[in-house]
Image 1: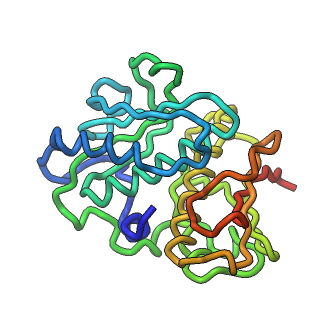
Image 2 (image 1 turned 180 degrees about the vertical axis):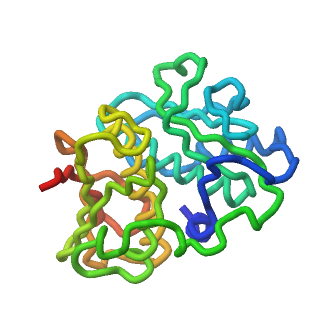
Length: 267
């Protein structure tokens, strides 16, 4: 990861409809660059195979005015949804740096066949943005939960106040962070429907959301140049069982760094 991705956090927005964004097209070279960039991103779990395909939006059920859709594929292994969210958000921010607008499209469907031994997970629509004014001008005016709602314990300047702007399905923001000497990330397990998400799909999309959120967390921590002298330790768990606690998150903080993720049901 790099500082450019951090800077793009403040610029990105979800283009729910691509309207009045200009007439430029994404070039063939840019499409090749997207494929190349994705191969260089850091996965949350390097043991899970993933890939992307880029197809014209008209070959999908997404009708948001995009030019192409990026289809994200993955092996189905423990933590694959969080992993695809983590990788996909790096791609999201990279595209913003190239003046390409994005929309995570969770209800997307495609006629494309499974890719090798991987299945389609999620997509986002993309289109070239000619007018910089179409991007977010003031991130802090976005509708998000307050720091107090998502973070318990000691706040980390430049992290606690930024990670809450991670995108999520139907803006559900299913995360909770606790910092009482070690940093713990939880997902709220709320019953019922969320926005247009069917009740049986809430867990699916919110697991992807958690990968997106942890990507924001990693980018912010790396930008703050936290090292092994900092007391913030991550561990990562899926909904049912523990994943490998030695997952490398590329934060350059040494062996002390882990990621943790837990379910937290409503009281």
